[in-house]
Length: 127
Image (cartoon, rainbow, N blue to C red; front, side, top):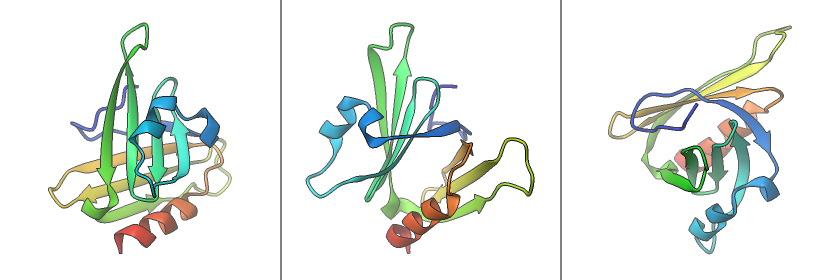
């Protein structure tokens, strides 16, 4: 599923290591900005830094064209976390962010993701 922040979306995100983040993202980072968590779909990525969320949407069959979008924590008005249920076969967690302009971004995390750590990250920069 392509990443599209122009509409309310849900992604099937799986964790990746920082070294697996697309090289172009490092050129977008500010001097004091650090990658905290990174996730991917099949080709797309979502990166949580200490300042914002960056999405990388790979476009087309060749994947040479990419769309980069940023969601600054300073514009988050509130967030909601849904934890996985007890004894779920495929544990998943959800994160919903509502921004000051009313836009909502939804993320669905697959597998063993510590959603509490993401909540603490958001709390640190949003509150």
